[in-house]
Length: 73
Image (cartoon, rainbow, N blue to C red; front, side, top):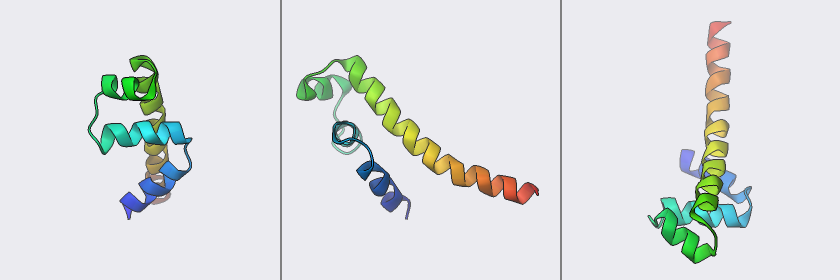
């Protein structure tokens, strides 16, 4: 269930971001390897991966926050 949600969310991000995310989290590549492969800087890779992970975090935090709020009411 969660994996399906992650896959769906990854489909909604730009291809370059999705590729970097998969290189890091599926292939286990380092920031340096990703930067070399994508022809960019390590800083850009880190920033891009932060954005994707932050988007995932927000997606999964929102339902949890709503459930907590509903339980308090």
